[in-house]
Figure 1 (tube, rainbow, N blue to C red):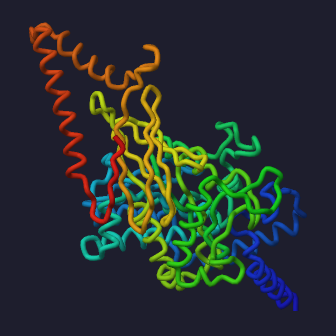
Figure 2: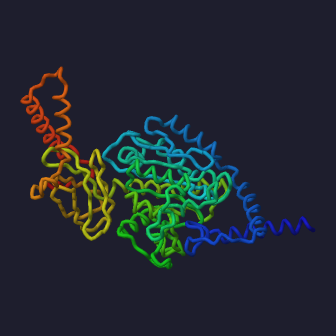
Figure 3: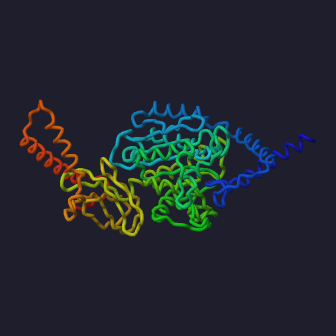
Length: 486
């Protein structure tokens, strides 16, 4: 009888957990994200023990951390012509955080957008890590065979981090090895809860350093426990549960709907209209990765809940992959199938300028890359926008575009603003030219006269001007419309 009662209690606890699993989906607690850590110790330990046993059983058929590392290296060994693998850091327990980059020129800086997928942010939500390996292998297998696969590999740098929280996965729990919810560990725009960099978890630091080194246009993190595409803002100033729109609310809604409507059944949700939700309207959280990406990383990130069940049986993974495959592919491809893209140059020397791009009426600015001066801005099709390029010491350029169903290319040539005092005149070009000249004339064995140096500099100037003209003539992507703001 004792064994029967014990079995009944175990059955009851596991089924209660399954019934209420959606209450701990994206953010954990649905109220505020500020969690009361006090529990009745005995009850909590019994629940955790039963919960661990259940998840340990469900883990059969899922890749272990060792299996995942082998699968990532096997993928690169098979698809090395369009991939590279690298680690952005280590977890608390020293597990490498492996990333797969997929591109026709992996590891090379190019004037094209970058997208990142992150899986397994919460240790007990492992579906993402499995789906991301399937995505990588599908792209490899279908490159030059499927138009969508070919478009993504040729036009995007895709970076995939299958597991942000390998320790939580192996421990069968939500937080990392220190019990910290990684989706609460980022700096917050409303509250100074994670302002001390040294107190953040190594997994969080790895993501933040990653975005300092890599410029991502957009990204998505994969979670479980619901079926919805979640977009910023995730919190509100007064901690209220209410819709709180970010400056690019329309663009985020467009991205979320793109994922939801490409999904097998997400858009038919009875809980979320069209299968999308504003995070703060669903339930506010603070210290989340999504908002931090947008504010501090210049990256448009969605939080994707891809499975009602946080840890479904392994035999359901193929079905979940089929339900999400087109959504994942369409989301990445949207970076080059929509929006406005271009490069920015200086009119006086032809050098690329890392200027800023702003849209009139939207309080959010992105920067062109430092070396190539390319930019990629997500916008909603079917609307008119004023695009502005600004750079200290140069005259602002503005052009009006009407976004259709295709991407637009808008290049800018900025002129120095000579109305400014000499201390504010641009030196972006002069510094580079002067450096080249001084290097030449400082070498005694060359014995180059100043006249010859000036001639060479002038020829270099003419070649750069010609390069800009050729750039406008040659760089015409298929299906793109080009506008040049001179």
